[in-house]
Image 1: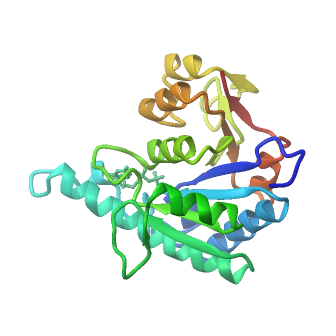
Image 2 (image 1 turned 90 degrees about the horizontal axis):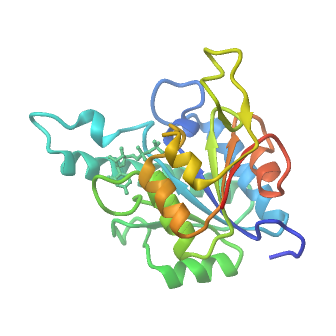
Length: 239
Ligand code: UDP
């Protein structure tokens, strides 16, 4: 990685919804391409880039689980959705000119590599953008927790959590005009305030690993580069 970067190795959490763009479901190819270009631009700065992809644009386990479908099975389906998104993003990144590899926590070797730490680190050192699919590989978890877990085990310097708003606010800025944005929060505050931006398991793990979380809006082009270089409007959750 190039010297002078605040976060030489980043883990970007891209939700399934971010890949949906204006569509009500699934993938919006121009939006996927725009996010891919932004990831490639972050790599061009000298960052090593890992990405955890969500699956909420296709299926959320908690939403489809019910009388006829066990939660664990529904969550397995949700994990498969994240692999679809990973493959779409992998291809868009390669079209944008950078090498990419999808690694799945749910092994499916004819489709992509199974996730393992050492191969993931090797890909990162060789400048490949690594798409981490399948979340943690376990039901009852989220890809937010997966993002913090992978960031911790892959020695990433920060988690860049992409959202629809440019940080964490005191209230919902869409409905409350008096809401103000936090520049900085501690992990303890993030947990105590019961913030909706990430689940408690993810914040607790980030606290344990002393891992900064940069909350930023992915709506504008260049957002990932700005968050990776410590510029732009963001909320930093850090010790
Ligand atoms: N999921 C899971 N274990 C994980 C990560 C994800 O079971 O470690 C399942 C879960 O059903 C979840 C779905 O995959 O609803 C999609 O992930 P998530 O909701 O985190 O995606 P996002 O909200 O980021 O699009």
